[in-house]
Image (cartoon, rainbow, N blue to C red):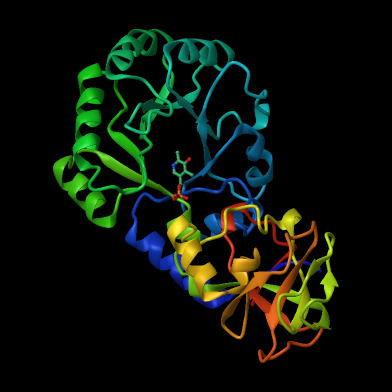
Length: 349
Ligand SMILES: *Cc1c(COP(=O)(O)O)cnc(C)c1O
């Protein structure tokens, strides 16, 4: 018993279908913990959506999705000579991301005729060819004849429009003279930007890679809950917990399922922790003034404080006197970051 992610199946599937319809060429991203929903489930959903390609983060993630989705598998991490060997049965389905001439040569020596997208460096400064590097790639591409499936651009999360940068990179690609770069695989463009891009480059195919917007785009379809495991009444001054803290007020200690093993409490607590706001809290004499930190658990719609740092599998909350005390076995809501949370169960209704 830990954390449960409950998915409103019909509502989630409606959202997925609508999102796919609104994003022609969509490439669902199925990576990491599968955005909390597991990669296997997302691979099956991608099959159901009818897309021709999904993207994984790493070569290590391929086996889990490859048996649940039968189309092409784009690997977002650029190929390097030290990535794990590819299962030969998958070779024809995998599209490699390449961003350096030496990798292009080494990949094609190992997998002649490999399918590749050529990545261009963006202002993210993560991976990819510079404009000059792509020019230099033209000769090995002619000589080694990979199946060039397009141009990849990984853009920063929205900070104003990306269109200027995308246009410059597409012009770099055209300038390289490499055939096959007229498909552009992009992330993090708004619907409006995608539309403008298609209008500016009508001969290009635009393929939006999307994870968060697709899988988590309708948060109302998703709910994460923990279970109340124990309740203890405490009076002001009573000692509790690993470090024998004392209760600052009368109230209840609540032990709920879900702890550091699930990713709970590993992030900085949300909210304003500036010196000024801490001073204001102290002045108000709030519970966080005595060192209690806001937890992601909420009871009756109110976010509660950790009574002490979360444990591996459970967390202890403080409920001040006067609040309704939930019973053992009751479910409480948890506000999580889906990509960093390990849930124990996913229930699709
Ligand atoms: C993770 C990732 C995406 C998808 O990002 P979301 O914000 O989840 O939509 C797209 N492109 C690349 C290269 C990524 O690594």
